Amino acid sequence: VSSLVRHALEQQKKLSELSAEELSRFSDRLDEEYYEVLASGSWLDSKVSEGGTGAARIEEQMRRAKEALEGIGDAKS
Amino acid sequence: MRWRVGRKLPAMARFRDPPDPVFRSINTSVGFDRRLAAHDIAQSRAHVAMLAGTGVLTTEEADQLATCLEQVAAEVSDGGFRVSPEDEDIHMAIERRLTELAGPVGGKLHTARSRNDQVATDMAMFVREQATSAQALLGELMGTLVGQAERHIDWAMPGYTHLQRAQPVYLSHHLLAYFWMFRRDFERFAFCREACGELPLGAGALAGVNWNTSRMQVAQELGFESVAANSLDAVSNRDFVLDYLSGASICAMHLSRLGGEIVLWSSEEFGFLELADSFSSGSSIMPQKKNPDAASPHYSGCCTAFRSPTTRTCRRTRNTSSTQSTPSTSACAPRRECSRRPPSSGMLWRRQLETSFSLRPMSPTCSCGAVCRSGKPTGS
Image (cartoon, chains in turn orange, red):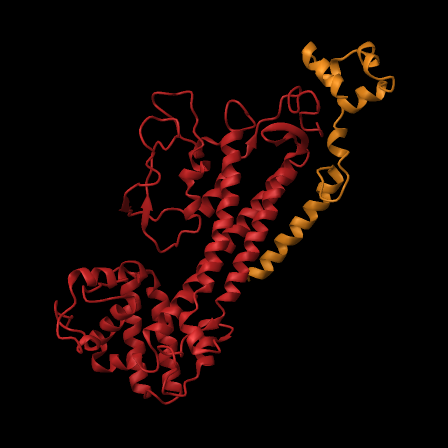
């Protein structure tokens, strides 16, 4: 992968702009999925671990934050 | 009647010579402990009620003292209270004024207490009040952060390490990081309030007093949980001040991080957010600038984040940019009396976040460069 990144930098291309032919020079495992991963927001939502930035985890965190905020309201009064 | 200049106070009558003016200026604390005045009067009020309840004062004496204390309180709150040059500290100033109003019975206020337990009590009340106020401000700020996180729940942005784009995160995630920092700060101030919970008053100078006073009555009146168990510890304990300073320093550091990011993000180079006009300043010779002054840590005064609301001195600084050729004035700005009470920084931060956090949508092609192409609200 690092050679792929170096190649992209040398070619002044974004990773998603590399052609299938270029990809094949670095790996025989990179197929269409490579473009899917780069083209979507899946990088963010792949962070599925607790406390991570994935959308589901943020919703969870948001709930906890609101609970904490309510707790604070109780503590102040 | 006021103390005449040069008159020896009763406690000083054992000395033949009057205090040297230099010594007096070193020894006086009234310049800064005057902010304890309201607490000092409140504890005197409770003390008088207790002395009457335990028979140390007659009801008439207590009533007279209470009435005159109210008058002193009114003078303090309307700014008419005058400190005499002989007043070493605020306790002495208030008692002196009380005696002017009440006559000799005023001296009885000091029965069964000392300035040692008195100042420790004032400090505990003052710190507790400040910690409570900091908690209220933090609560508002945390509410604002949750609201902004909710509004930007799926806005993608680059996350950085070493200021290098590392991995994408949601803006909501980034903002909530601050929420948890401020929650810890909130807890630290809660601990600080607990640490102020034992009443020192009644410990006397250090060994207790000659009356079997009802300290718990005073404690309940003043909102203390209990009474300090050891008179020596009671008069010397200022741990809670350090607890407060520690909590305030850590909180100021968190505010400073947030401010630093607002400055960075509103720069042309980052362009992540544009501050509201109402929280920006300009420059007549550099009209392209929109300065995030209020977010700059050295402007917004993270070091005074929880400035006492009763403090009327403020620092004015201008042009503290590190790139200017003249020396920065931030560290040595003259203190000057300010007729307007400066807004607390806590409030400033909340208002700024509320009004200014209109983030620019990220360019669809550049949020995370080569790695992430999702640089726009993913929901749209």
